[in-house]
Amino acid sequence: MMVINARPNCHSSGESTAMKPLSPMRLLLIVMATLVVGACASKQPVTTAPSEAPAQRSVLPEQQPAPTEPQLATTPGGVWPPRPGDELATEADAPPMPKMFSTDGLALDGKLNPKAELKIRAVERWALLIANRGEEAFMYLSPGYQKTHEKVRYAAEMAGRPVRWFRAAFDHAECASETSCEVTLLVDFRVRMSAGMGTTESFAFVKERWIATNGVWYHLPPDAG
Image 1 (cartoon, rainbow, N blue to C red):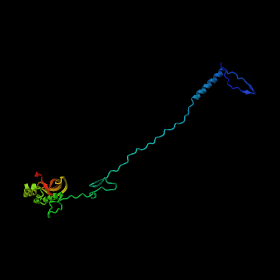
Image 2 (cartoon, rainbow, N blue to C red):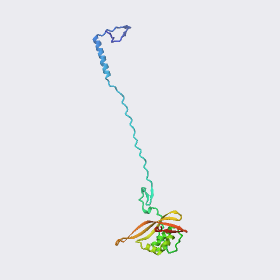
Image 3 (tube, helix red, strand yellow):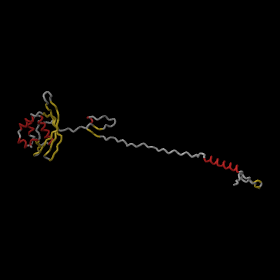
């Protein structure tokens, strides 16, 4: 059997003292005590440092697109959309519309210039028709039409129509050449309705063909061919 010295050697007065060998029972107790202490030591909880909390990510708010201001537009009624603090635009705020050359106030008493510009000739012819002066309006028709039609009959046809014109205004002209144009006029008229319903007013855009001969503008009626 193996002998274990349980006590260290002690030197006293320069002499060594020998240890007595342990009995088997005592040795067994020492071994068991050692095992129990080791087992208890292995069961001690291991203390670990607390882990750091994960860093919170900062959430940035989503960037919204910058609001764009609506584009202002100039309309016949003014500026739209209205700016903050402005009242809705009215007709008084709108820029004045260009005045159309019309039969309103057109003088027919004086001598008319046969070589006047196209828009004047076109409006003068309508002014004569409105004034029931068909024979004079006949002179504004093309020379070839005048040769093949009667002036008196033409005047009677114009006066006998159920539509009564009371205003005509030059709108625009589209010219294929210096001597041929298509004129557009805005004509206001009254129509007599059936018995007991009186008359009604309306308007229409009328297109006419005009040709120039020797510097004079003439209207070419649709039935002239």
